[in-house]
Length: 369
Image (tube, rainbow, N blue to C red; front, side):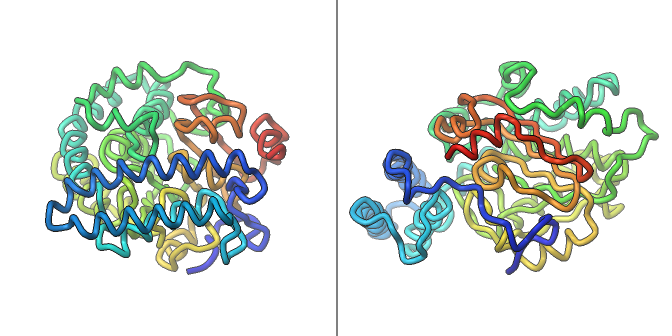
């Protein structure tokens, strides 16, 4: 495990996390949010593991409650750092220490099945669009997919409903989005079947299983592959909430390929690769990623961070040595406030390597924290 090889300045990299040691109000907000949400996590674990796990469930509940109480009494952990990343690790430790490492497994399996049933229609819809409209629809699809997140109180209900993906896309906020670099991105995106993409190889950090990955991310990266870009799908090593793991991603790609001849052609032509990030939480610390990821990323010229946790929460101002795209829907009011936005605002951030970062609203909001 080491720094991500495509960071512009690895030695200067820090996770763009909230400092919960110096901000007492933010600390109480996040401690309460994690404590309340853990009850929902345990409810899902009951469904996943059954009655025989009653004792481990009680033990996990007690362990996490004790950890939260300890931080309320003395918020300075041994590491000397406290942010949302550390709270995520504490939650996962309480689960894994008690044999409850994948409490959302049945939910992910159900959501994957639902999304796979809808995938052919989504692909047909995209393919029928005029070429000049396709990329905007794919970006909006990525936002819509990001709604289906069991880590956020604002969106947990979506995973319990039948999916009308086109309706969800229509519900996304219109442009201009909160952070909206789409025009600059559209200037370099290929239009027309024979036009190559400007990137030879893209590393795409993926987020949730089900609709998010299958209907949001896959049509987007499939279109990049159609224009010649090799796609490296970087997913968690370990389960966390309803995030898709690397092993699950491989299985999903195999299943989608069996129903999508064009995708199967790209897969057989070595345009798709799945790697583990080495990560086990919904955020990501790019100072600590797997050698497998770095090996696959060595020749890449594009990084895509998808999802609020990996892009805005933990890597809002991260600078890469190659072009980068950050796509997400804001689903937590505290995170949204950091970038002067609201829940359900959209973020489409594009940073080509030849462009100096501007002191925009997002940077100013971050600097004020």
